Image (cartoon, rainbow, N blue to C red; front, side, top):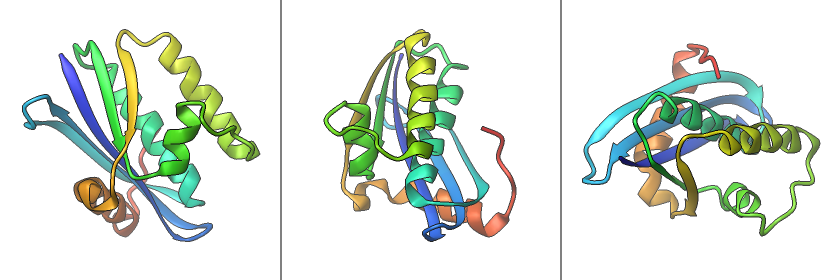
Amino acid sequence: MIVHAYTDGASRGNPGESGIGIILKREDGTEITSAAGYIGKTTNNVAEYKALKMCIAMTKQLPCTQLIVHSDSELMVRQMKKVYRVRDKNLRTLYASIDRELSSAPFSFDIRHIDRAQNHEADCLANAGIDSRKRIRI
C-alpha cells in the first residue's frame, strides 16, 4: 500500500509553544489516520522534524510499501533529500534519528515540498495541538 503523508510543525514564536500535525492518506485520497499534539516550547524547524518522526512511527504500524511525505518545510525537505547540509545541532540529532528509522523501515521513502496552501489540513492539526496543550509522545 502506498501512503501519502501530510506533516506540519507549528511554533508560535521561534522558539515558542509548538505543535505537530500528521495526516496519512491512501493513494485515492481517503484518510487512514491523523494525529495532532503539543510538543512544548521549541523552534518551528524542530517541530517540522518531530512531525516527520511521528509520521514515520505511525506509518510503521501500517502495511505500507511506500511512504510519500508532503511538507511545506522547504528546509526540512531539502535536508532530507541531502540537497542542504544539516548544520543546526538540534536538527542534526533529529535528522540522524529519522535517518536510522528510515534505514530499517519496511517501506521505501520519498519526501516532497508542497505549497503551504496544499498543507492546510496538517497545519490546522498542528495549531490544534498547540491550542489543546495535549502532549503527544513521539
